[in-house]
Image 1 (cartoon, rainbow, N blue to C red):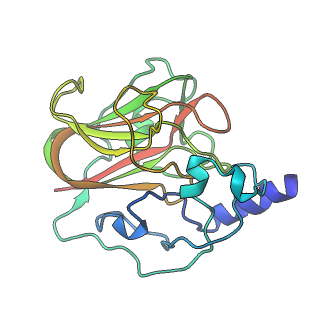
Image 2: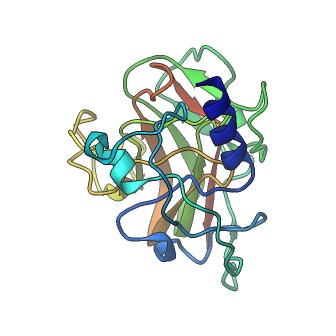
Length: 235
């Protein structure tokens, strides 16, 4: 089992895409930054987050949508004219006022590495990190990194945008893979995915909003919630 875990971890670290949803890999927004190669999905034996090969009849919902892919390079994504990174250095509000590790500013400090000291850890249950962009902007893309130090899937991953700092009115859902509505934010239609170095690219749909909030509710490795970085790209 240890050998299989190391193999899967090496695949992820080497550039295997961790994000997938039912709209397909080509649905990734053009604004998503591509400093590393981006890969399309391909068929291989299904595995769980610890690298155990599973028979087809035992596939869970996230495994059916997110089998570890064979790397197939494609052209790098480009950033449309006028679109730039808006989130670096912006204020961050956390649902957990006293996180176990780290603090809010780390979410927008521009550091996306999965090394110790570069991510925050919040308690169990539903948690969120909220970025204040300072004013309403046209959001082209949101890229979210939880932590990818090992293969894991975060539950109830939801990305919302709003002009209301309390997210009670005018909320636009950009991504939601909460398959059982455990977060009480509505039933999700997106697939769960394995965390990887590229982060999860979410289409902003050119939504105009000041705040972006990213939820999660534990993961397949433990009950805690982690955020390494949230990037908001727009005009």
